[in-house]
Each structure stands twice: as structure tokens, then as C-alpha cells.
Amino acid sequence: MAQNFRRYTAKNVGTSNVLIPGSGFDSFDTLVGVHCTNTTDNTVFVDVFIDDSVSQIYLVKGTPIPAGGALQILDGGAKIVVQSGDQLVVKSDTTNSVDVWVSAVDAISS
Image (cartoon, rainbow, N blue to C red; front, side, top):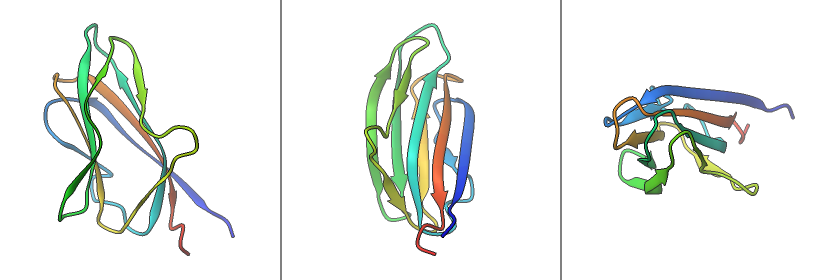
């Protein structure tokens, strides 16, 4: 069975919640990579969580990323399954400070 790989991005994430993807996932998908890069000259602190419309489940909370550094949320083969309507949310403590790249496998239960 062929799989549909997807990528979602967000540039210059700041102090407001940024929803990835903006409309929510549309099926049972698997997140296989979440990469956050600090684009500033100072350390920033990031929150990354899943909003399932009932709860906010944190993957990382207040995690520092040094100036010019990066944080790989999923590593070592870890995967996270999301359902229809779930949203990945990213927020920084600093305005326009983080770029995000998310890799996912779409409709994995098909």
C-alpha cells in the first residue's frame, strides 16, 4: 500500500499559538518529524503540543533552543499518531523567532 507523505511549515513563529496544519489533520496521520529552528541571536523557549479540542497534550514545554540552534521533537524513530481535527501547536516566548518543519504520513489507516 502506498503512503502519502506530507509536510507542513510555519515561518517566524512567535508569542501566539500557531496551528499546524491550520485546518487540522483530516484523517489518522502519523507525525514522523517535528523540527524547530531558532532564527534569532538569543535563546528562545518553545512549547509544542497537540490540541485535540478537549486537551492540550505537550510534547515539549518551555524548552530552550540556543541562538541559531534547532530542536528535533521526534527522534530515534519515535512517531505520534494524530486523529482528524487534531492540531499541532507551536509557540515561542519571542516574536518572530522560530521556523517549524513537520513531516507526516497521511491517511495511514487506509
